[in-house]
Amino acid sequence: MTDPAKPDPPKPATPEADAPRRCPICGKPAEVRWRPFCSKRCADIDLNRWLSGAYAVPVVEDDETPQEEGGEG
Image (cartoon, rainbow, N blue to C red; front, top):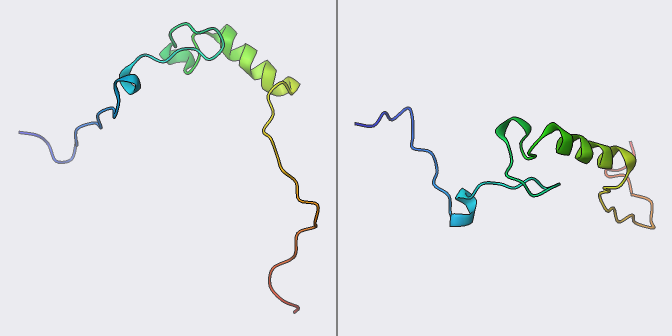
């Protein structure tokens, strides 16, 4: 019998979802300890890229100033 307090884990929707992840820096298989990276070295490379501004989140700024919501009072 199955324990109703412990449901079965969800199954991957696609075969790719069950495939081992690759390190986004070097492409080697990712290690659980450094997930999603394969090593501390690759994790540090990624951190340096964020801190140095190599990665950036694009932002679209409006030309107009935002209007305050609500009314006077």
